[in-house]
Image (cartoon, rainbow, N blue to C red; front, side):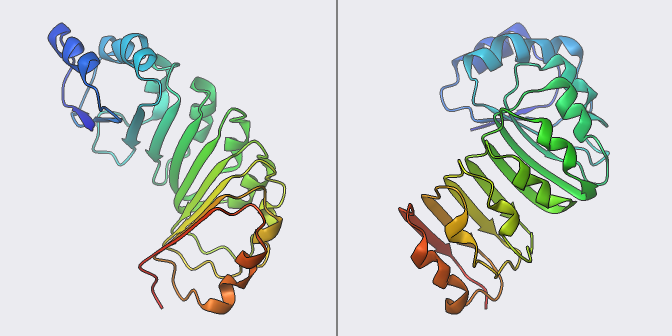
Length: 219
């Protein structure tokens, strides 16, 4: 489930949250949170639920206008953030060492994420710049492109450890390099525009593929 935090947490809140069995995501739904609440999340919640995701959007309407609050959450390993037009990626590197990152920007360069050397799962959405930097992160195991139209997948060839590759929305059609990318076992396409049978032929040459899925293809 999703935990929406509207205000600073009390001890009673702490006990209820720790006892929740199916908590998968935290969102800050209020306008302001103090450092004490963030420290509780870092010191009590994150160690007990290390896979939990924090979702934050820097849209000027939330609890925070920058990612500096992450300085209170060094135990966080799973972050989803929509940076819109803010250039805050360096702050992710300053405060966190992530295993999972979902990141969206509008015309902001992704180059700094190469410093996240422990990252295993990367989800890229919206319209960032310099998406090709992903090809210099050979430690990635799971990669998703959402709302991207990639001219070529050649830049992914160095991803030797990649086991999952997913495309959502967008219009990526040149899949000729798929057989040369990592050890992909799972491949999926969701709402990819104008994807035709001839575009999919390289899939036949993927030696490690175990699972292939399509969801509502748009033609």
